[in-house]
Image 1 (cartoon, rainbow, N blue to C red):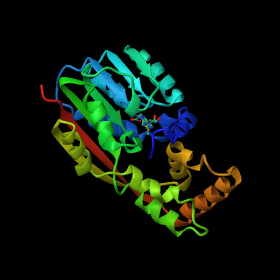
Image 2 (tube, rainbow, N blue to C red):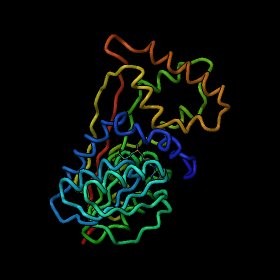
Image 3 (cartoon, rainbow, N blue to C red):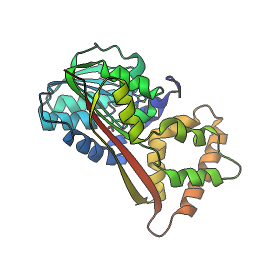
Length: 265
Ligand SMILES: C[S@@+](CC[C@H](N)C(=O)[O-])C[C@H]1O[C@@H](n2cnc3c(N)ncnc32)[C@H](O)[C@@H]1O
């Protein structure tokens, strides 16, 4: 997925409701930050910072006082600023993508990224770009959606006739990686992996809430389509997810990848 496919369009649209619809990302951010070794993390960089779930946890756990948030979505950056300013941090905002972020090399005690890595177009390149912003001895912590996430939804999409736009299917392979791949990218970027693991959960949710999450993160996939065509496909997807749901809701897997690594001192 090339930078500039406007993933951020989805997040500009969903920024106001993001914290409510994507509340699982907050608990993931907490587990990521808990896995960071004790240390001094006064100045941090958060890439794909969104509304700031990971940075918030850094401030709470380590008393981080200077935070730089990088995100192409203006709507997300506004919320990041409001939240982190309320927590007393000095905030710098950079509206950019990971591959062209104008932030200095070797400048940060930690570089963190929560639930954004899967949207980065060049995944090894993104890890390398984040690694070079670390001070020697600094720590990188990444949380991402992994291979197997929403596999049941992919099955539903594949069975729809007439077929949904091909990009709605191919996006799964484009964005998802395994925990081993994430750890490998960190090693290739010259980092020492401290901990890397995967968590797989099976969730059951009301089909409407499920579709609200999908729309919050992936509405940009409909951007190039004629609005009527997109609406017709969207309605068929809602019907198919509703029919696939059982008495406890639509059941789907969610795989989270965690990686924590250090730049050698
Ligand atoms: C699912 S949100 C995650 C937000 C937040 N970090 C969290 O933990 O909830 C993904 C974020 O990645 C941003 N993003 C998308 N493409 C990006 C890119 N190429 N570089 C940096 N951030 C990007 C989006 O705008 C969005 O704010």
